Image (cartoon, rainbow, N blue to C red; front, side, top):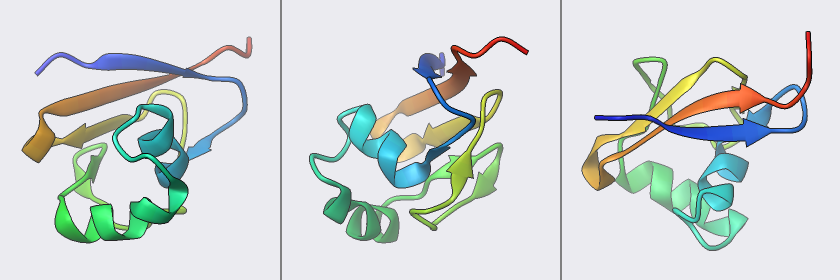
Length: 77
């Protein structure tokens, strides 16, 4: 499965914000039910916390909807 690149401005984005930003959910309030229904993997580990911080370099996969994201930052190191 190929990864879609998601570029963020800050140091991190929460999992709920990522789901909304990528149009997987239409509002932040849908994050909790979505995570209860679908398996979401962060760097290969199952993750169900909507507030989990996702950092540049992280990989997020949602196999049930065939979605994969690699996080990048606009900030220079």
